[in-house]
Length: 476
Ligand code: ADP
Ligand code: MG
Image 1 (tube, rainbow, N blue to C red):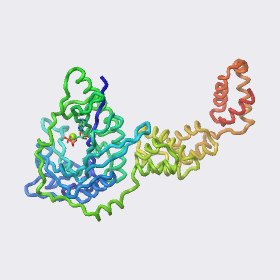
Image 2: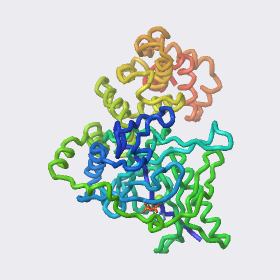
Image 3: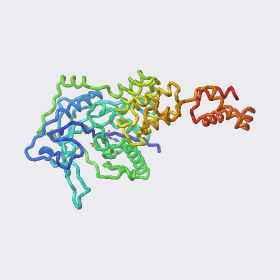
Image 4: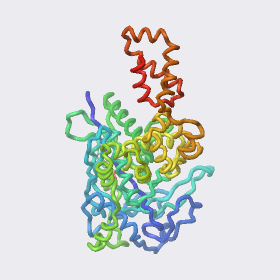
């Protein structure tokens, strides 16, 4: 049997407002437990929530960017459930009329293909507190600092068909909310996390299978792993004659598996009803126009510009714009170098990204500045060094040994372009390899590569490769 997977994501984006969504409590991360929970966050009797206008503006910016239908009036609703970290006994969220209705986001797949993912809704809600289990013996602690932190929950249609598509969607969304400046993008601190809804069905079947929901995955790599694991698990269960239960699961990154957490309720179990303490939100057109005017260049607009301005491929441009800081770095390199933009793109996405990954650094903390990288590209461009030697120079720059020019001078890495000097090396190589020479002359053309390699080795990689080829051809 051939199976097809169906994936829909619910993404929780923490909005980076200074204060909470319904109170003046601070939202800064990492404070001592319960030092940022005010009477409203603690659900003291008689307190009243007041909507944070900045949170509303951020949600609207998102809605405008994805061309969504915006609801006015939008209504807040109480979602009732018990949990120790939820003192009110309900979470203020939205159900029937979320602030942001249907919209869409385009994603670019690895083969350069584009796909539109429809977004069902994006609603404002408050985060709950946190139960702390470490540091307490036989007890749990409750930290309500997070209670009331504003979230934008973005719900997609079940339109993704593989873990790779889901990750591409998630990355596109991440780029968007960080470009918009509505989220700090810190995934480790949980500012951008996702619930992955996954089901499988036989290829050709129209109806969806039963879905499970894997909660709170907060890295792109884990999302891909969790989804792939869940697809495989569901197929195994069904092929062994079992059925999938609609449930909430947890991803265990250490064991690379998902585990059942609880069976999942339906919306009506929460007894949602409009919150009588909050007025419906009416958005005036003038506010929308003001917000629209504030929208920055969006990822897909930047991508289109990179393609037309720098002749990059769709895929390269997509990788570069996926991170605003990376895009900015790339543009700074292009501006400062004589080398073609494509070469700058290759270095940024290749050697630079690899080194950042290796040392777990963000681009904003790159030991090699955009200007320094531009300086290196200039030396390749004017034939001072070969592309291969450039890698050595780059590594030295990374280690803090100075600019490209200083390193090239100090290490004597300047490319040899003096014909006479190269000829001397070639003569020596030919003289030292009489057997290979004889074989080459008797028709083993492949040995040409051997001679090129020997000459490059003898010149410690410094001979100009083009000249080596040319001169060797003559000499042999
Ligand atoms: P809930 O809060 O109960 O999880 P939501 O409507 O907020 O419900 O989210 C449902 C999510 O599950 C959406 O992202 C939707 O695309 C996805 N989904 C719904 N049905 C399926 C299915 N059969 N397989 C995979 N994903 C699904
Ligand atoms: Mg859900």
